[in-house]
Length: 205
Ligand SMILES: Nc1ncnc2c1ncn2[C@@H]1O[C@H](COP(=O)(O)OP(=O)(O)OP(=O)(O)O)[C@@H](O)[C@H]1O
Ligand SMILES: Cc1cn([C@H]2C[C@H](O)[C@@H](COP(=O)(O)O)O2)c(=O)[nH]c1=O
Image 1 (cartoon, rainbow, N blue to C red):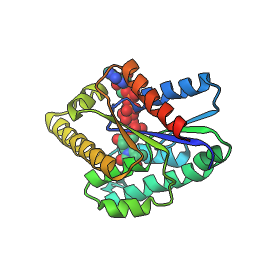
Image 2 (cartoon, protein in one colour):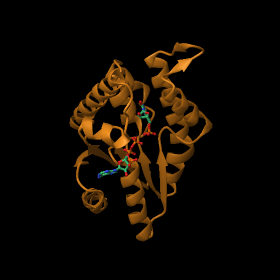
Image 3 (cartoon, rainbow, N blue to C red):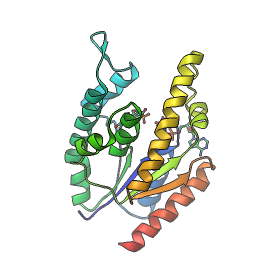
Image 4 (cartoon, rainbow, N blue to C red):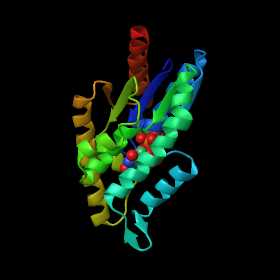
């Protein structure tokens, strides 16, 4: 594949969509053809998955299993890969995705699934050239997304974000495409760090 494939990952509110948009603008100003995309996708399947997570995974009054949830994310991803990512890369475009299969590894692992099973379920997904992990403490994530429900709900969500963050840091040790960026910095400073990583990758090609 000739194009360049970059993924932003991180816990909720880490600044992925902000940085993905800024990076897409940076590439476009330089004359590159860019596809800015995300997961879950904006397709019918992706919207179904998004609605399902928002209502806590409940179908017909019962919670679906975490395995079924992981497979639904993977089904949306398979369509994303076949219909959007691979065609754009074949045409030599820059593809920037806000979340990808590493989100399944970090989140569904935090929900108790086996990470090796998750890796195998997602093995159809081509590895990107760069994964930019926007690393943020869970408390700041909660402040940014303003998830202020009942105290018990807040504690549960905070604990989940903590686990997800830890998982991402473990994944960064396992997958060499990861680069960690401090997401506590101001937006413009993070963008500058991201551009430096991308320029380094462009020089290697
Ligand atoms: N570096 C930053 N410092 C402070 N606030 C930020 C920073 N980057 C983004 N934000 C703010 O934090 C919120 C979440 O940002 P954004 O939507 O980019 O994150 P995200 O990682 O895509 O979130 P989600 O995973 O929930 O979709 C927004 O209100 C955004 O303006
Ligand atoms: C792709 C993917 C996502 N998730 C989770 C992560 C977030 O909590 C939501 C998506 O929210 P966003 O505001 O659109 O980023 O879904 C997941 O658990 N597993 C995945 O594979």
